[in-house]
Length: 97
Image (cartoon, rainbow, N blue to C red; front, side, top):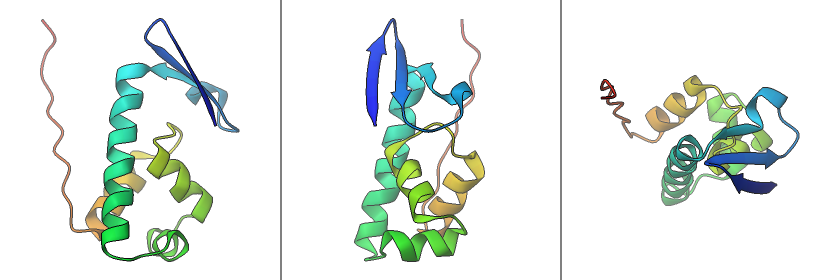
């Protein structure tokens, strides 16, 4: 994948929905951090990408995109992956001032 950053936006050059190809850099960083956490713990549990993808009900390629933080992956897949790894993700919602 090729990533181009400009004006606080990230342009992702990968075959994904055009709607997902340009996102805010702060959101991209959060997706990458979440994906890296999932990959790290998957490896701690010694699960292959293929094996873990089957447990999630997704392809190995979709799991790879999830772990890279590509923004076309449903939130449900992230939450299910965290659950299978015994992890919790806390979302804090606050009003911008």
